[in-house]
Image 1 (tube, protein in one colour):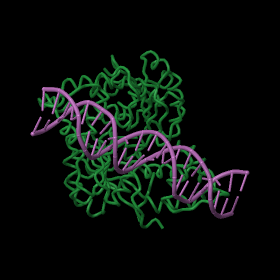
Image 2 (tube, rainbow over the protein chains, first blue to last red; image 1 turned 45 degrees about the horizontal axis):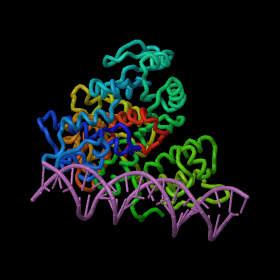
Image 3 (cartoon, each protein chain N blue to C red; image 1 turned 180 degrees about the vertical axis):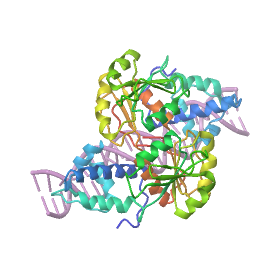
Length: 220
Length: 220
DNA sequence: TCGTGTGAAGTAGTTCACAGCA
DNA sequence: TGCTGTGAACTACTTCACACGA
């Protein structure tokens, strides 16, 4: 059961995350079973793709009733989540940082922002959305103490690389970068650059070309 | 030149946008020429990929000096930008909306947020970052009057689809959606779902698996 | 009969390798 | 000589099509 398998692509992981959210909605609506076709329609994908994605879970559906919603959610949790939960650090508590704190507050208890940092001393030592904001000097010890492995960068462009380096040095292995620069990180550290300017230029370009409704992969 | 050609992929457009930003930096630093290899290193790509991407511009480099920076920037502008500029509407002026207004303020005069909307009457009729915030009732007439074709959705999940429908009805042809739902839009409307929860789950997953430094496509 | 699971086929995207030019 | 421009090879991803089982 999902213990050992060869690498799963980024796009599959992204889609599995979408399926899980859809399944949570279906479950809340009282559905107990779902067919690949339904999930595909909700996710804007094709049915064979959904089935292929779900294959990596090793969770079998039945041809009579499709997939059992509860079991599938459990299986996704086991596959996607870190057992026991994974804390996330946020660096940069400007408008975007605050928006992220709000966005992630209470949404996924298993993957929550557990510490925030800002270089502005007037922002430090306050709490936003039940999340304490620390001064940058505390970055290393807080992250080490809480065994944080994932961090979100919402800092100005020129600060992104130095902050990323510090984070990696303290043990962070995954970075979600909102600054409009491409981060360098050593082998073994996963970086996702989520560049809003690039996304907007893409939308503007395809808006002019009458691009079909895309529903592309979210970020990278 | 670049007038008629067969469709260019989303990923190529995204990379061209990155190249342009890098070229602007290089130009500001005084560089007049650049080799595909340099650009590739800065963008975290391979040199042949950069050359192949630039092929769609129909802009020729020279084997002696590489590409002329100024000419390449002009060529990218001609290819990516709407002549005369393209206004963007923002719907939803919460923390995320404010962050976006700040992020895009003054950055690209050719693709700037020219109108913002919020359903909260206490937010309307104020200005944030020189951008006027209108009540939702004014959405259709402002967007039509300014010929806005691109919109950013920074609204709560349950409002995203209804707002998207209204935007499409008033003539918007490209949507950048930050709400964690998959938008439906008719043929000819380009939608990019930029799902931060999905991105974070992806980072958390690959952080555990020791994923190599990615530098993937930003969004979709 | 109808949906899952999956090998095989097809398509899109990337890299290779080299001809051609300065 | 060294870099661009690009056909060809390769790789990754998606879809097809069908065997199997309820």
